[in-house]
Amino acid sequence: MTGAAVVLAAALLAACGSGSTAASGTPASGSPGISGVSGAAVAASPGGRGAGAAPSTSGEAVVRALPSPSAWKQERLTRAVSAHGGKTATAPANQITARVGAIFAHSGAGDHFCTGSVVQSQGQSMVVTAAHCVHGGKGGNYNTDIVFVPGYRDGAEPQGEWPIRSIVVDQRWIDSSDPDLDVAFLVLGSVDGKTIASVLGGNKLGVNAGFGRTVALTGYPANAGEPIACFNTTTQQSTYQMKISCPAFPGGTSGSPWLTGFDRATRTGTVIGVIGGYQQGGDTPDVSYSPYFDDDVLALYNRAVAEGG
Image 1 (tube, rainbow, N blue to C red):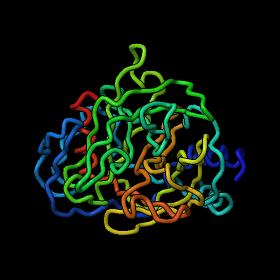
Image 2: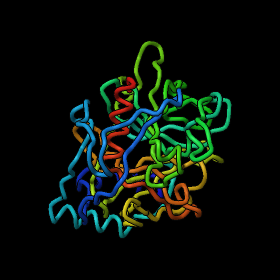
Image 3: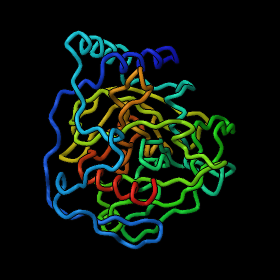
């Protein structure tokens, strides 16, 4: 897919909304627990998946319902997916992709191994990524010696390196590497006295958005200096897993945001997934997975907000 086709895809996503074809997820059992960098587990609201999440403290930063586009807009979107969906190219440098960054070991001079993106929050200091990028799961530990570099391209760091102040993952990821909870929120420190969202803005977090959404992916392959992009329509892999066909998304793209419902007026979209989950995002570069963002993810987000995110 050419750069022009990527831009066209973004424009169509803006015009057409989300392209929903299915309802939101179903509840299951379990009681979430959440940990930060300190490793102290903090119990979240009791109740099962899809229940018990406290209301978001950041207002419109969280989207609980995404409208379906009108019939003619859906037709345009369907044609665009048919012509250009499932094709991968270098991501254009713009306000949208500037919110996506590479996660580096040590500093920008180290290796980048995962992807994250800025989401709106009360503290304007939040990045969402995959849990396996920042915690080893069962028997593992936190990966704390990392920085977030938004908009990174071939050694250039247009907005600098952002320190990670705390990491929030679900206790069930820590205990059992539960792929349905392979989501993490990073609370960033400030740079030059500014928060990351005050500099770059952020996308909204979407929960219970349903399956069958047309989303755009942007991520950083570990062996490349520039991000790649693709758009296509998601399908349901399992009760709490989504799947998408986008070729050549290799290692390093874990944590890449699944963006839908782009709003031209505010220049923001809604993140409803990240590459991760089943097979830690997929065992081939051509098919990627994401945990389904439900009320457990909202509870995790709320905990990160409470941590200052």
